[in-house]
Structure formats: structure tokens, C-alpha cells
Image (cartoon, rainbow, N blue to C red; front, side, top):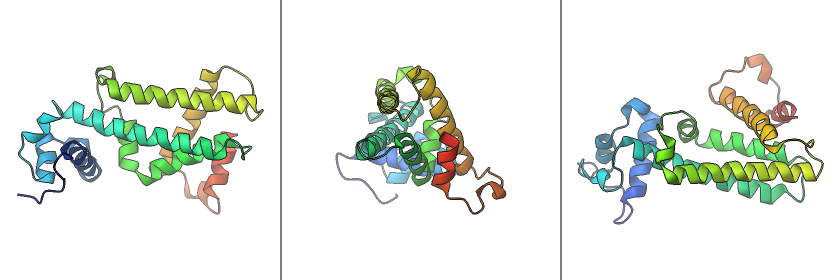
Amino acid sequence: MAEKTYHHGNLKEALISAGLEILSEHGIEGLSMRNVAKRIGVSHTAPYNHFPDKQALLAAISTAGHEKFHQTLLETFEQFKDTSTEIIVEISWAYLQFALQDPDRFKLMYSGALEEERNHPAYMEIAQKSISLFEGIIAYCQSKGQLAEGNVQGVAIKLWSTAHGFTILILENQFPPQYLQDQNLKELLRIVIS
């Protein structure tokens, strides 16, 4: 049996961590409740004490990712709201850095692997909380003249689509090399977002 890698009372967090490791190594097809249990050295039925099925485990992994992401956005906004004239660039840079530091979780968060998202209230709550935060940041930037006035949701869709598309192209190494050659990545992002 594998060495136990969790402390009593920490099984749920250990299952989430093991699930993320398996996703990283083997993709979604390699993730099963049995494999997660084996990874941390517990019985194959132990995960069911916390997650009724694989979808619930995926929801927990995604929820934890969104909580971490929300905290990243909030901390970035708090850091730059009074000192930067380019808050949206800083937010977009934080978005990219979050994805680069934890690419497997980031990809899962936006993969569509989680079916019936509405069946997972904690996931829905944190996802909505992040959207509300992003819209609040946009409204703040509009009030400071850093973004043009306009429908906040429309601006959010445009900026998020741009930052996300840029991030995915970087993560998947899809930019032609000449596009990135001798480029400062943050400066390139600034140009894209502007």
C-alpha cells in the first residue's frame, strides 16, 4: 500500500491534491476515485465519504482553483488600485501568472470536464464571486478613467476573452516563435489588452 500522505482529518484536501496530481500526469481519463485513493494510500471506498462520484471530485478541484484564483485577483486589485494607472494590465498579468504557475488546475477550471456545474453550489458560488469581483474592478477602472465608459458586462466579456485567449496560446505554446522573439511578455500583454 502507498505511504499515507495525509493527516487524520485532512482526507478531503489530500483527495483533491491527489486528483490534481493525477490530472497533471495522466489527464482526465486517468482520474478515477480508485486511482485517487490508491495515490494517498487509503481504501478504494474512502473517497466516497467526501465525494459521491468523480464529478463531485472534479467540482472540488475546480472550486479550490477558483477560490485561489479569486484570492489572486483580489490581492492584485488591492495592491494596485491606488498606485497603478494600468490596473487591468496588472489583473491580466496576474491571470497569466496564475495559469503558468498551476497550468493543470487552470486547464481543468476552464475545460468543460465538469458537467452540470449548477449541481455543485460551492463551485457556482465562487465562480460568481470572481465574476462579480472582475466586474467591480472594471467599474472602478471606468470611474478612474482607465477604461472607457460602457456596459460593464460587455467590457468584462471583451477583456476576459482577450486575456484568456492570450493565456491559452502561451500555455499551449501556440504563438509563432517570431511573435515572442525579443518580446517582454508583460509588454506584449499590455499591447493586446489595450
